[in-house]
Image (cartoon, rainbow, N blue to C red):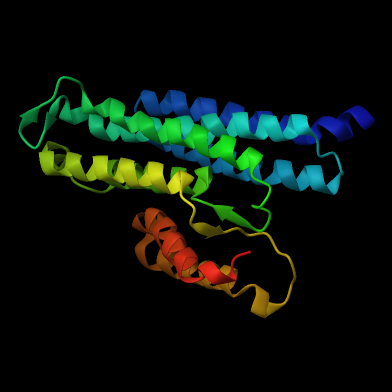
Length: 239
């Protein structure tokens, strides 16, 4: 019984890793709908592994390391591959210039900086009630949300516009920087249940619901953009 209690959270974390791996495979194959399901499942499992560990008082250094390694695939490799897929149609061409390499590989910088962000997070003891920089699950929702919207709703002709490739590269740079930036981001962790202590979280929750209600699928990446801006607005209240 103690074995199950001590390892249940780790098993959930490995489920996150499995789901992220399946999502990455299907993203490479072009099956973005299955990838979307896998990301949602990984998000749920990533939440519950910590919840279960705290509830059963089975927190361990092994669990911390497993969580980051699983997140590296589900929320590090997957968004990098999503940007890779978005940049793939442009080959070596950027604004009518021919480059000596295929620009799709620049998308993997998101994976590199996700790895760096996770390593920094493991060593930082200040991020108990807020995140420093954009967390990897939110970044995955942003990048894959844009990808999903483009392939599901937007016109395929957008990938024939070389100017669009520049926008994707700028997004890659911005995403990579946000992952390791010093900007404090709202975390849904409660130091107290007093309303005045949780205004940023309430504003985030209400705003996100309104955005998703109005914009539907297009609202998924917009929620993350809103999350970044609302976090910046409430910087002084995050501690």
